[in-house]
Length: 348
Image (cartoon, rainbow, N blue to C red; front, side, top):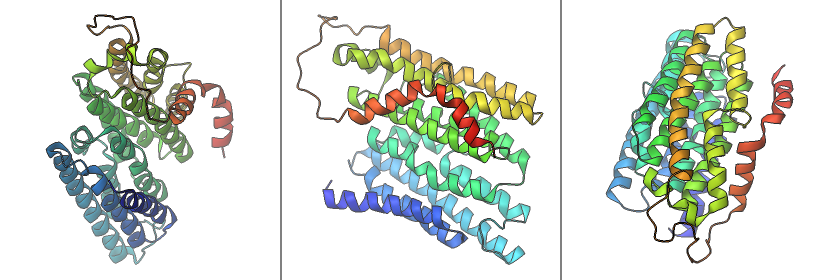
């Protein structure tokens, strides 16, 4: 793609998110979300592959539907209460419709079906943008409206953690596994949203770091299926030995970074007398952990059928910058000791 066009599209992505962040009026927030969608569509379709075009079409249709729902709900809210302000959502009907529209935008279960299909059709770089940056603007709106209907949030959260775990069990495609991982993590964030918005934000940030690291590892290995992970030993042995730690961090095992948000969320749910919800969420994390372990096993404990299985093959040095990968990997593995500092910042 022409670098000037790429720069304009990335600028549009940033601007759309920033407008949504800065807006207090529903029309402005809607405009920011639309800019976001329209800026990423050329990036998604840039390879002109049938799968990429199909994924782009699916993404456009779902995002347009969600945006239309959002616009309808905000107009309904203005009609019922005379308010266009995002933080003045008083009527339960538009609040519920907006919550569901934003759930469709980020891919929460049960309106998640587009996410694995879309992610599967994209290359890893655009998939990374879709899994991280594109979640920011809708999350900013969800945090601002602070939905009053707690039941709908808990149902959305629990179905997302369960479907995110179950859906990924049977997959062999890495991008689909990452999509289901994304759904499960979003479920955890939504579960605790009404009790501790700052904890939701912490979970979102740690999820971003771990997903960034995982996508970069797969990009460096040029891996798109589980089977291609087995060849990574001969390409990058040190990185291959670190990758299971990143994956287990995504699964939420101590003493890795990913344990911190899950631990704090379960603690918060227990404080709110939602012991059953916390138990179901913790059990659903085991489902996700299974497919992370499966990836780790495929990557480190299976050898691809090479003639010289132990030797590193001669190759040109990679043109990719490894500094972002190094930083994000270190953060994805080592940040658990900062948990007391995080909790101190979270408590008002």
